Amino acid sequence: MTSSLRTLAGLVLAATTLCACFSPVPQPQARPLPDNPRAQPAATPKTVVPANPLDASVYRLDGGDVVRIDVLGEPELSLDALIDPSGFINYPFLGKVQASGLTVRQLEGKVRDGLRSGFLVNPDVRVALARYRPVYIGGQVRQPGAYPYALDLNVERALTLAGGLTAFASSSRIYIQRHWAGEQGRTRAELQSPVYPGDYIIVEERLF
Image 1: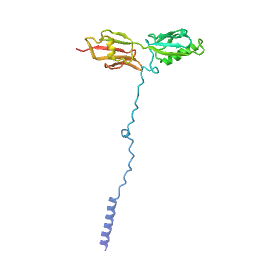
Image 2: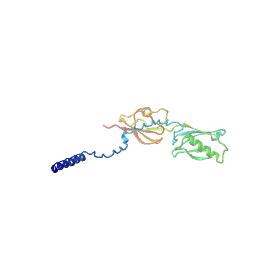
Image 3: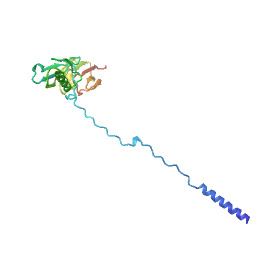
Image 4: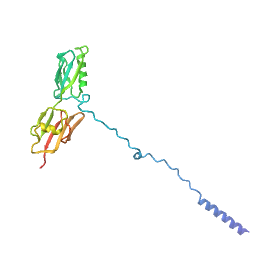
């Protein structure tokens, strides 16, 4: 009887131990994954449409440009004015007026304000661009120099103005030096690259 009790107690202990072995182990809670920026839908880039750089609302005046200034009812104040290399025009009553870096509308306001200060009560001033500053062509061209700017001018037409390329010119080493419309520095140009007022086209010698 005692032996049977010991056997039964042993079976109970073994069963208890076995159940403990198969008890469910608590699992750690899953942490939310951090946002993956690569998984986010890419933002659609906005299309930037460049403004016409020769539009009167954005074109910046500089030395060599000629502006037409008209004052209603004041013929002695209506004239063409050349912007000098330092960026100024000479204007009656006002003397030297800075024009470089301004649009024609800004220059118009500047002249109007100047005339209103002690000369005219309510001047009606209109300013327009009469002639663009020239382009400059140098390097391996037959006739280097300054040439009048014309609308829709490109590198190929500009080189024709300069008499074409010399025998030593490289058609693949043509550059435009530009300090205008927010652009500065020298960039490589193709024959169909647009040319703007004040551009300096440089044709380098070909490598033998």
